[in-house]
Length: 422
Image 1: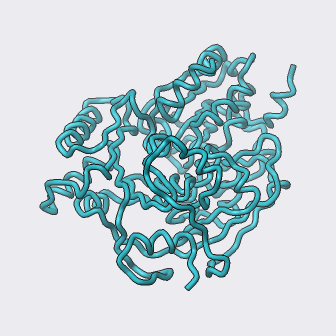
Image 2: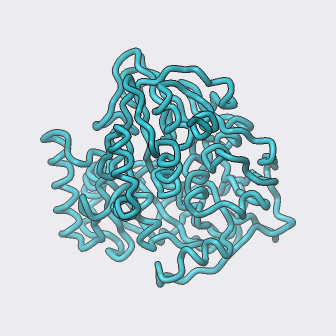
């Protein structure tokens, strides 16, 4: 029987002889990940289940990243709990200053390989689909069950095939590709589905850009999003991991729920206007909107690719006097690489703030929340009302070129206008 990539991975991680969309199966985890928000709740639920030990310490990863550095006594207590629990359980723990944002850390550190199943206590666990893994975000109770048993229940998703054709134009990035998909199918269009990204345009993307695309699959309501593993993935993993893996693809005659085609030749930079990731317009329709804050970072767009794009806009220029800019490398590795390239000094010289790796402002936790009436343009993945602070603030989502150009202009502009300025 032909299968999609999602079905193949789940079939390999369940005791069932066959799977089909809609089936409820128990799935074995290769990795279970949690953080300083989901972790403490999962630990309490695990205790209530009567479980005292994790199923396999070698398959559990704990990464504090949301309230990092601790913003108050309560967040410090949560992180202390995380630290102490990890030591007692003997699991991998990435201390502050030695890790970064969880999804970037797991990819960089070789925990993610094609065909693996990763259960994460964070909705953006779908990011791991950039490497062909089945990453799915679970609530804290389900994470507790994963920690105790190494399994979770999963409804087998159908698959929407997303074909990217053509070549990206100047100032178009992976961010724009996933915004185009969300604009096409809507924020609930992927419900009970996996997105599988294929085509020449998909294969041409770097790992950094695939991470940006896979990261926002959940913004379409999807269970996860995949890029089938290829030579680009193999090159990235070479020397990074010893975990075994094989490249899998959907069978040509697999049954897909739908097919979406995005022509990259005709795709402009896009902006998601407040207050939904699905409120997507071409950049030209957002030009002229004043901004108070620019935020470049997050688990979707805090890579070296994003920082280099921002640097292209800021090199030799200054942040607009009315604007504050916050730049957040996604991990300590990215931070150090940017430091070595001179990018951090470039950002500071332009008038931007450079933060330690953290999820802080992205979810309105700390380190850059918005006041009533303010507008921000960010490379983050969500712009719901109140997401980054006040419910009376507006958040626009865009790629790093567009965000950095707005930092210079004080309003949303075409980055070509900044790049061409003398």
